[in-house]
Amino acid sequence: SDFENPDAARDALYDLDPAQVTADLDAAFNYIKNDASSTGEVAVVGFCWGGSQTWRYATNNEDISSAHVFYGTAPDDAQALSSIKAPVYGYYGGADTRVNATIERTESQLNSANVPFDYVIYEDAGHAFMKSGHQPEASNANKLAHDKGWERLLRLLK
Image (cartoon, rainbow, N blue to C red; front, side, top):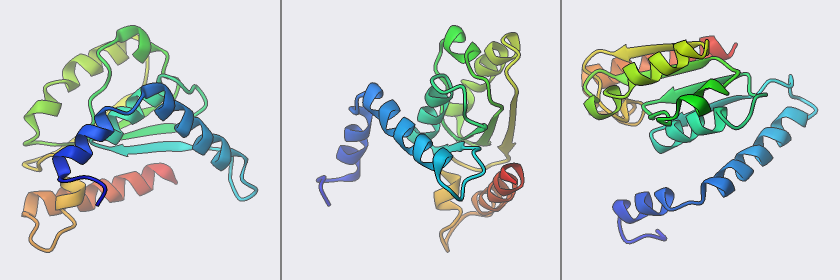
C-alpha cells in the first residue's frame, strides 16, 4: 500500500543499498544463530530478487550452512563466487529463460572454485513458480514445481 503499483514496489527493492541489505541479513543471521533454541546452523533462502540476494549474501558470510536460491541470478563475478563456503542449492523453472541463461556460467565459475552447486530445473515451470504454483488456478507445471521445490527444500534443511 506504500507504493502506487507493483512495479514501483519492485523498483524500490532494486534501489536498496546492498551494504544495508547485508547488514540487515547479518543481524538476522546473528539473532538466529545465537537464539537459545537454535542449532547454530543458519541456512539462507530467497526467491527472485531475494534469490539473487541469497547468492550475494553467500559471498559475504562464510558461516551460513547452506544457500537455497529460488530463481535468482548469481553475481557475474568468479572471484566473489569463489568465496562461498556453503553448498548452494538452486530451484529453477524450465520456462524461465532469462534466469536459466545464467546457470551454465554460474555452474562453471562455482566448479572452478570447488563450491558445491546442486540445482533442479522443474520442467515447464515459470519464474515465481513458488508463488503461482500455490494459487488455486496454478498450471500443472507450476503446481508440481511448487510441491517438489518445497519437498526438496524441507529435505535439505533437515
